[in-house]
Length: 122
Image (cartoon, rainbow, N blue to C red):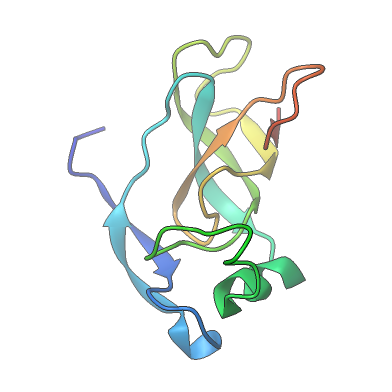
């Protein structure tokens, strides 16, 4: 993957209604330690997604803008970060992404037993 890889993503630059959602280009996220890069094939839409976009949660869960909404994801592992074992490129996965799932790619971390973390189910 090149340093300047670009993907299409739904993002919002300001809190508000659905008119804030824009399809645009964004950098492909990079998998870090303990994470994988998932090529998104499907993303779930949940009530919390519009509440975040509307700004209902910004006081106790602020997010940097622009933001890519969505957490539920299903797809295929495209790249594996350091510290991840037992998985391979091309493996189908589903679960929750660390980065927004309304995009062509998302990063997800593995949930270890006893550790509370956002996780993809491998």
